[in-house]
Length: 426
Image (cartoon, rainbow, N blue to C red):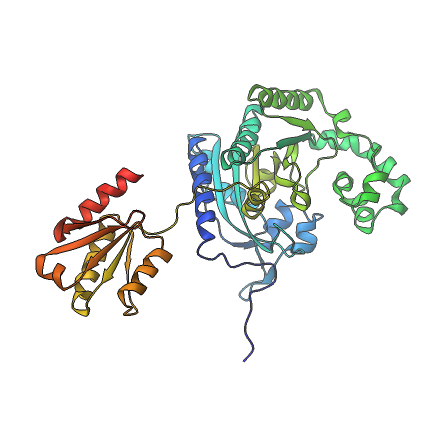
């Protein structure tokens, strides 16, 4: 019979590795708490129209990468979420979060996204994003806060060599002034650009600057910069963001070509990069989306956020040789010397677990030597031994695995003794 294998572009995260994920996720939640961002959980699938309107019909995500199916009970199509912002903004509008007394609304999400793209190192078709959104404030200080949160996350994980690339893509009015000058340049080289860029010229010319094709980048290197067409207000906002980042000693460089790949961005756009990481140099991206709430049916409220890939983070940590302080092993393995002790061992394991001690026992009727090998494989700090003598005396032999030191402990005191010893080791 043919074996069924995992779908291309996905991964099984196995015991021994999943602990790294749990550590990273716990750090993301703790950092979000410190910045006063609360968790939000939205559906894994949404109306396809949400992403068409929210992300943009001319984006690669909507044109090429979404997993969509027809809804059998209606004319609506449904799509596995390819990113998190659109769903968060939909929930913000639907649940009238703009009416809450605490403003801006600051939320974070942590969960799987889905894009049909070519798998490579650090890039999967199902991947996990950590992202934050702050909706309801135009203050450039919150732009800097969002960027700082992302940077602090990477720094606290142990990464070095990080920098921020920063740009302002202006407002709709700024881009309208820039558009005619950009079109004049792009139309001059239209025939030499790739097919995607030729298509984008007529629909969203600013996104031509986002093309990764080296020939296209060379042909557009002298294209007029959006920074030269910012209004005084937009320029002042950009200068204020840079000022706040400098005040926090967060290094940044201005990259006028940085437009990001989503249509909803306005004003601040940014990416966080790490030197010498090859194909996944960009670790994180985000920016403002001041028109998105209105586009999705809400009041015209400003917003800003970012999203980062946990897979790329773990790859970056491996590239830099960063070892996460993930503890392994259990606290206690209960070894059974005689079949008569099995039930008492089973009860003891339950008591230990209820006392907060991680514990396990043998379920394969192994000999004592094999049980000690199992305790070693499980990384047990202690082994509790129960045999005929212990049953008769109402005791347990407690062995510290690192030193080999053994102590006879009264049966009803085992949980308390272990908890005390483990607390002293912590």
